[in-house]
Image (cartoon, rainbow, N blue to C red; front, side, top):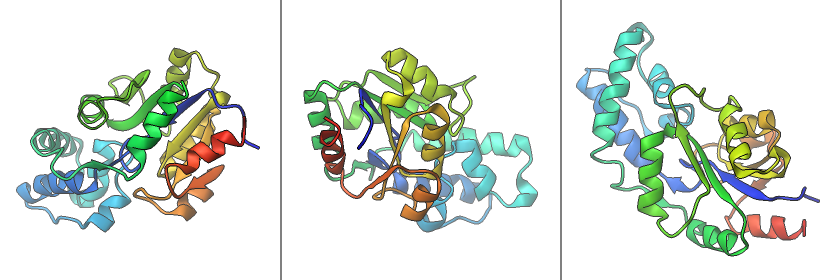
Length: 222
């Protein structure tokens, strides 16, 4: 039987939005511009989730990973992605309906993402204009990225909800470890960038195969 849930927190990339192709296109453009090998979408699935700098730490050949070069890649990615972040990005099937029903039920909703904060806000305004999120946190200066629980705990405090009463949905080990470290309820989604095995190994309490399965899980606690 699930614990009482008083708020729902979502990861963004791979959980609410299929952003993969737009991220890969921008990242590969940066790599190609620097004369470096590019990577497939399959490769990038395993690189996305820990923030832009960490993405390039993995995507750039080891002998080119000096800090100044990585910082330049991060800057160039921001410039490139800002021109093409919404070309193919779309909500996953069933996500708008899920958000509408959760809002109808009066549950506070929040976003916790390692995507840069400005881009996180752009995505929410562009794709979910009718959904009121009580808190939206992308990656912010001075706050360590997930899986550090700092952002999650700040979010729970702003929601005025105990961490143990927050369900946290995500598609990667990063999200599950974040939820566990913050004392939230870790729920994995199988439609995202990573595997079900990764989610289970990382501590997912439940794996959701369709967005509306969250509603059934919540109903079973009422």
